Length: 367
Image (cartoon, rainbow, N blue to C red; front, side, top):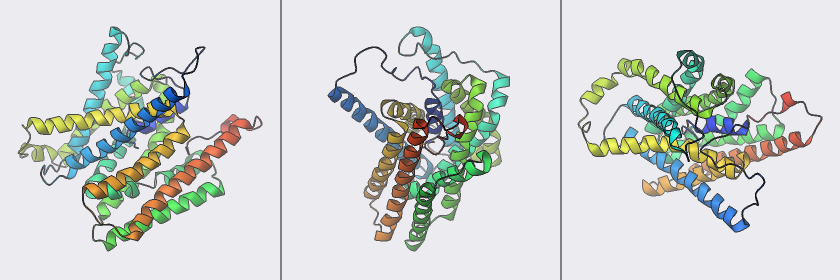
C-alpha cells in the first residue's frame, strides 16, 4: 500500500477493521432494501478501478518527482514533506467544511492539542520512517521492481507479531512467507544480473517493509488517544511529520538544493507536486472505500493484482526487457502474498466461528 502508500492505507485498514466509522464513507445498509445485484457489482467494480488508478498513478507521479532526468530534483525529503503538509491541510479543510453539511457533515472538528500531539509522536516517528523509506526506495529502484523491493512487509508482520505480541503463525502462513522471501532474493539476484541493482534501494525497501509493520502496531496503540478517529490521527500524524522533517532537511542540505533548483518557480512543477499530494491523500480514502464495499481479504487480493498490473505497466512504459527468472521472482512474491492473505482469511473465519476461542487470541494483524 501502501500504502504510503502509505501511508494512510495501514491506518485506515486498522480503523475500519476495528469497527470505526468513517464519515466520508457510505453507511452500510440498515433497514432498507439491498441494492440490485448488478448495481452492487457495478459499484464494486468502480471502487476497485478507482483504487487501482489512484494507487498506480501515485507511484508513477512519485517516481517522476523523485528520479526524473528532466526534473533533476534531488530532494526526496522535501517531496515527502510537501505531501504530508498537503494531507494535513486537506484534513483541516474537510473539517472546516463540516459546517456546510453533506458530504462533510460527519467529520470531527480538528484543533491542534499539544498534549495529543506528544502522545502521537512515537507513531509519527515510525510514520516518517515509513513514508521516507518508501520514497527513497522508489527513487533508487525502478517502478517495475518497486513491489519486490518492499515485499517483506508480510514477513515482518509475522516476525513482529511473535516478538512483540507473542502470537504464533501457522505452518501454511510461514510457507507463504518463505515463498515471498525466495521471490525477493531471486528478484535481487536478477536485478544484479541485469546491472540495474541498487543496494541503497534494497536497503530502503527492507526498511520500508519494517516500518509499515511497525506503523500498523503503533496505530493500534495510539488510536485511543484520538478517540478512535482516523481523521484526527491522520491530521496529528502529518502535522508532527512536517515539524520533524524540517531539521532533517536542514541536516541533509535540501534547502540548499531547492535554492539552486531551476524549476522552483515553475507552475507545472508545483502542479505535479500538488497532484502527487492529492493522490497521496486520496489513496487512504479509496482504500477505505474498497474495504467497505468488499472486505479486508478482497482488498488484499485486489492489492496483489494491482501490484502485478503496476509491474507490467512499468515494464511497458519504460520499455524494459526482463528475463524469465525476473518475472518468476515477481510471480513468487505475488503468489506468496496471495497465499498468505488467503490462509490468514481462512484462519480468521475459523476463529470467528469458534465461540470457544478467547478474544485475546483473535489476531487480525496478518490480514
